[in-house]
Length: 363
Image 1: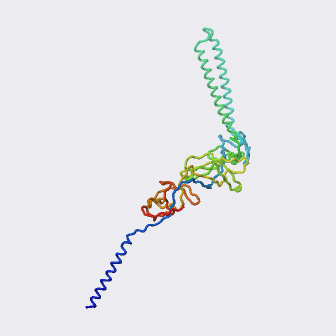
Image 2: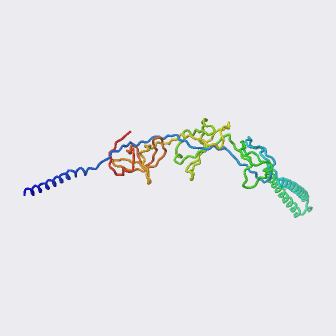
Image 3: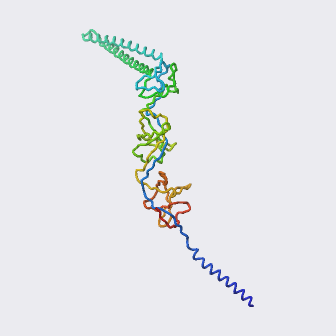
């Protein structure tokens, strides 16, 4: 009997201890754990940086010279490297059929002129005789006048035709369109020229001033260039630092490269620089107004979105942003943000929107 009572007492004691332990655990399980995150106060500042982009030097002016009439090259008066002046004769084309046409046109002018002068003289005599009553019939006077007018029109037409032929004849002489240098010569004397799809006879470049073209990425097209000037170096003169002035932009983004062409003018009076050279161009750029700048670690990038984490009333919010200029240790951002917003210094996807946190502000 004692053994049975002891057994029952032991079971009751163990059961009571278990209930007591469960009761003690229940209150602590109901307390939610709150994380502490490092954050900073968002402020606007001026964004300035220096970046390097590739550029290409091209002639200020360049022309591919093609003959306007077909014929044989009679004379080549220049070669590659020749310095030429505007209006200077570069080559002479021989086209006998055009010369024959010129002579024919001149002969027609002389014939039309003689015919017109004869009819004019006849009309003048008849007109003077018609002043005496009954000597000249009115119809005869009118016929003389009509003949004179017809011959006058033929004479004018012959003159126009002759001028046109002379103009074509002028095409037999190729002249320089501007001061420059001959950079290409593709034919020799005796070659037949003037056909379609052939190489130019000559290429003339004006290299006294060059254009430096830089393809600027879309993200940089909305910034300002300090003093509208750049510095650059070339492969052929790596120790020579040169300057250029921004003079024009295309004003549109190329759909293939997502860039805008900026063009700078470069003085080249001493012919140090060579067109076709590539250049390393340094640009000092800045925004025209302050913008938000945050550490790279504050920006969270996923497959779906890019955002920063803002803490408001100790509660997490995800704010979508777009990035601008990248600085050495920070990046420019744009979004629905305000001065003084509390931004988490090291954002991550695990810090879900709506989560309660304690904030530790750092400088």
